Structures are given as structure tokens and as C-alpha cells.
Length: 134
Image 1 (cartoon, helix red, strand yellow):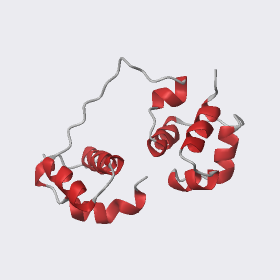
Image 2 (image 1 turned 60 degrees about the horizontal axis):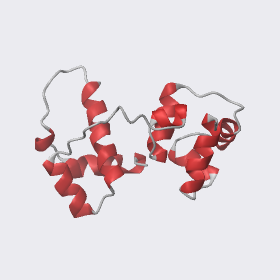
Image 3 (image 1 turned 90 degrees about the vertical axis):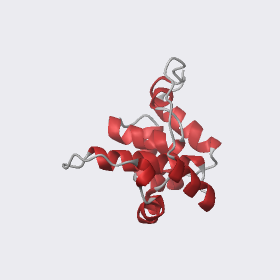
């Protein structure tokens, strides 16, 4: 069975990315990534989640090597985000990343207020975070 590092390398190669490309997208040093791929370093859950998101695979796949068929997530894309993504020709993974970024920001606010995702300026938000998208 392949190791975590081997699965990361395999997925990176499927995407035709160099270590430099993945390291840049995942905000890692190339040396750290090389050590990780060669099983010379361990990685924390936060960093592993970032790597999984950038590679477009699940944490379950990276950790175990096989997708967990028993877990299915339903994602509801707000209509305004969907319309914005279509208008801007954004790839689906960027729309999902925007939705997740917004969810995390709202979750970490100290002020508890309900913000309707349908009443949100997705274009302005996109412009402010697009450099961080995978």
C-alpha cells in the first residue's frame, strides 16, 4: 500500500505539477514537500487539509489511500455565487473554495450575526481573495 507521501506525489504527477508548483499552491517550502513525499517528515492535520484541497482529493484518500464511500457531502451553492461563477467562467473548485473561505471567515467572527449567502457580494469577495485560490 502506498504511503501518504507516495499518494501526494502520485496526485501531483497526475496533475502534471512539479514540486515547485504544488509547494507554491499549498504555501509549503519545496524542501518540506520533498521530505513529505519521501516519507522523511510528518505533517499536521491543518497542513494536510491544505494539501488535500490544493490537490483536489479528500483527506481520507491522502491518509488511507481510498475514498470513504460512506461519507457523502452535499454542497449547496448559493444562487448568487453560481451566477457570478458562471459569468466569470470560474472553475467549480474555485466556487467551492470561495464558499468555504466565506464560511470560515463567518465562523471565526466574534460578532454573531446571520449573513445570508444570497445577499453577499461574491464579486468583491473574489477580487479580495483570488490570489489565494488553488
